[in-house]
Amino acid sequence: MSLKPSATIRYTAMRLGIFVGCLVAVAGLVRLGWVPSGLGDANFAWIVLLALVLSAPLSFVLLRKQRDEMSQQIAGRVAGAKEKLAANRSQEDAADDAARVSS
Image (tube, rainbow, N blue to C red; front, side):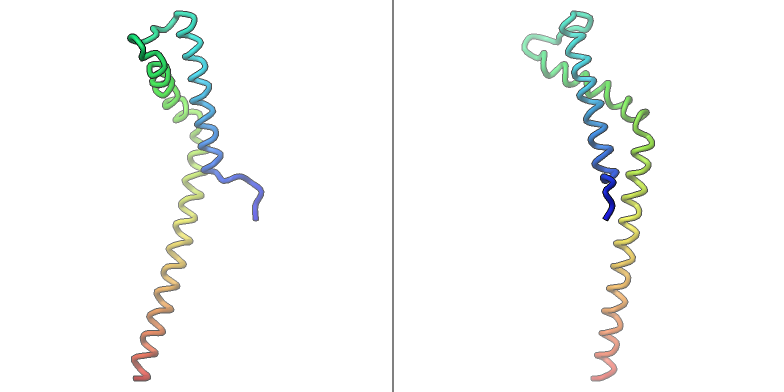
């Protein structure tokens, strides 16, 4: 078993880190008054929404390598599952054919 963390977990953790960094940065900018603070009591929702909007393109650009690794890992698992399914189907077909011949 490999001690290397799953590519999916690594990508998700890095994406969450980028979001938290954007959240802190936006909260700081709102606190300093450089960014509008939203309408009425919607300050927290405004900060989260703005952080999401900023973190999405950053994640898309900065995490390209990790996203490619994750997709390769998932594609490998899907191919393995398809091979196992095909092997199981061929075993069932062979057992069914043997049962029909013996009857």
